[in-house]
Length: 414
Image (tube, rainbow, N blue to C red):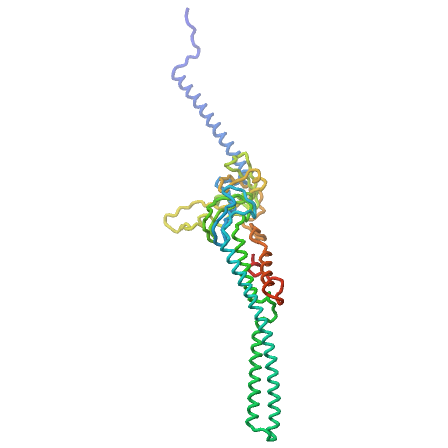
């Protein structure tokens, strides 16, 4: 039995060529598919960029910043009590540090004694005025008597009843009396100039002494240091028994409810960035699931290198251009901070929505109100005023006013 004959005999060379052609077609198909995918991705990326992506700028070079309120004494003293430690929550007006008040009490007592002594001296000036007035009146009576004696002797001398020598003596007595009257009037004017249009309480010497009492009273009050703002204590360095001088940092209070974010954007990202644009923020602490809402409140006036201690000097032969970064300040919604508190220095991711182009790159209006303030140091001086009034009343006698002198410019400035 014979085997069937293959009607399409194929040689090995033909099979190899056929396999090579199939592989080439498959490769071309894959290449065309890859090119198509690249083209589609490029088109999609272009559509995303022009329709959505170019309206957002982001950076991960952003950090939480805020006010760090330093607690420093205004007067020297020795610390005897510390009212809060690191990480403790304190409210505005809460006692943080107490200093030993003996030196301040002594200075206040000395100022009180000086005020009392000054009041008594001023009372003496008023008494001197009355004495000078009485002296002037006495001198005027002597002058009138001398004038009458001289006139009478002048008539007698004309008739030859008395000698010319006696008339000369009468004339000399009149001149002496007139000179004494002029001296008494000058003394009265000098004494009166020291007290005219014043009372004991409003005399300049008394007001100067009262100002020293008020300053000593304030220094006595400043032996207790209060929290200027509500926040959390940080960087406590003070210890009990430590002798501190004015301006020595003792601790800091950080109001975490008033923090902001400083985001460092490249200069090429600032073209369409404006004040007031909304910002979405995420923190490394809480992860991307927690979103903070904020807005741009200011674009930096200069780069970090421009304000460094040793600014870069680019006028050299080996200068290389480096893209600079500009700090952009971003405010954070207080409601978000209440739910998820942030700490100073934490890293953040910031994405700015650039759709709103109505704002400006620089602020156009001056600040109308304080950006940060406290009322702790505006203490009431009623205690000092009462103390001054009591000293004046106790040492001024009937001529003293019961009202204390007006507050000094130092008190008014506070």
